Length: 144
Image (cartoon, rainbow, N blue to C red; front, side):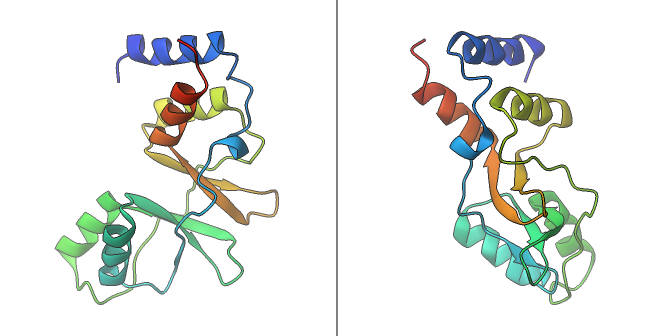
């Protein structure tokens, strides 16, 4: 996405007064979550069934412990047995339910992310917010 496109999206959101809307208003609250003991194969199958490109990895209490993406799976599937457990990133970018649309836009753009987990103060996963969630919200709530 070029800087002009990025600025255009931000400008439309600003004009529609959407910048301060909390992510809880447009996130997907029914996020698919994975456990650390999932295999590469079962994770690929989960991504295929749910048409997702990544997911938060959670512990037995549904507290976030990592994230995994299609890219991670590509590398793992090509380099080792797919019957083994997934390897996931533990350096996680996440937002809270009160994070604003404007803040989410900046994070998605600057970090070139497709989606971000939404967690509460205790690190329980509340949902995920993707690029298309943001775009749909802007399109549905903007009279431009």
